[in-house]
Image (cartoon, rainbow, N blue to C red; front, side, top):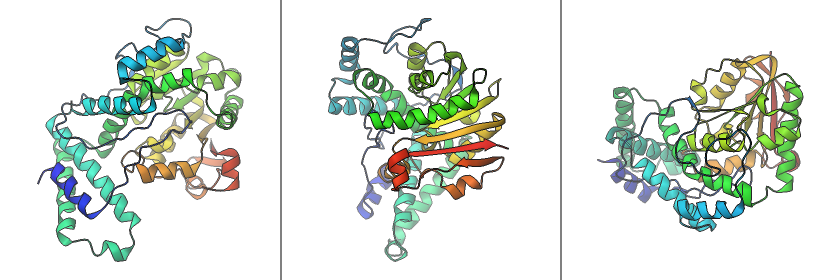
Length: 371
């Protein structure tokens, strides 16, 4: 039975939530990531300096930051997304995602479809009580088991991991939406309360690195944190950023060429320098294994360096994303207990619990120090 047939079958038993993931910083466009038939070849994503791809906003890289004017932004949005309204951009982004995923090889297409099917199934099962789940027809359970076996065989045969499949979907999503996010940052304004919370995290990073240290922004996007770091007194040359999306990095290099940007998988990142602070701003939950990501980050720190995990809208917002898109966002932000159990670091600033008064005031900000 094909993956697409299984997808249709499972929808008759369980209703999967299809709400699009929302912005973590208040200006991201909505994405509806669906399983689409007939995908084609996926070119393996390699960690590399620079972005490549289309010119996008700002054109070629120069020695000075180059922010396009609003007229050029509107023109580019119309060309790339078919319009400038939120609906136009959402539809245009989905078209780009679909086209990207149609470039998957047959084995990668099947693996990605099975991966999405199983992730959605597992999430829905986890949300059900024991009684309703026990009433799922045995035929359906057998079908899921076959899907798991098929996926395991594909992973083994083609030397893949589920993290690879997760990255395929993440890269497709962020590449497709990169120019729209840059446009929104140019033509719109981040809410004042969000700015305040983000600045607090960047100030913490700035204090840790001083005038001679360096920082790493993991999931840096198009360099959205760069102005906040500048306001905190951080020089452009002190900023390093890594993002899975080549299109995001292309935009970062254009907008903030004096900083150091890398396109690639954080787990495969082996920089030549150690860092005094590492920031995950609205990005940790997008990684396939957040605990592994924090352990990796700790290994890249200088002695007594810090890790700042931040989400201006708080842990409750990430939980909403888990509910709306359990394929791309598979779990919430780490709890205090989980952070305290991480090896090689100590928790020196506790994050707010979901839906607490502290979360309303501060969002989510956790600080870990290497020991």
